[in-house]
Image (cartoon, rainbow, N blue to C red):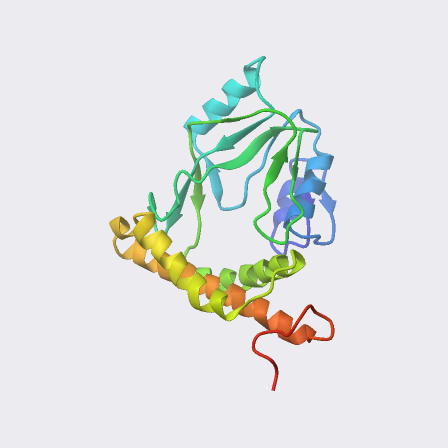
Length: 232
């Protein structure tokens, strides 16, 4: 078990079951998960977030993989995302495949500030049984996390050499809404679909606004060209 500063009873509870408990400074999502992967001793790794649950069907599917002599090196798992008490099938939220089951030594998480993912050296397959993901417990929960993830997303874009423009602020948010609500049939989810499309459009705007802010703070003498808009 790898802890990075939890303030609840996590350490106390884990020490009731194992002596293999590590406490480290927070290194970022991808780096922290890779640290846990490196310390794992079993031949297979199943990576889960705290708001995800393995269904009985998924457990059976995983057990079948572990018993198969010709198993591949990693497996994508479809994820059922729940929002405000209900599974959302549309808005691009299903099947939402995530690669979470993989052989130790064959997979690592990408070193990203946010939205880290597993990269596999070898063959990958797909499981049919789903993982349950209980996302945001409330709109307030979404807004709190949006502030954190939009900051990390802007930092990642900046690190990749991106800069925000007026077109990004004007066009990306409405495109996000149209994609989720119309192209990905979010309208069939009723008010949840409209709410999700609106919230994600707002997230997109905030992320690129923070990216623009970082360009402005850096100043033209440190960056490549004038930030938009030029400071007064």
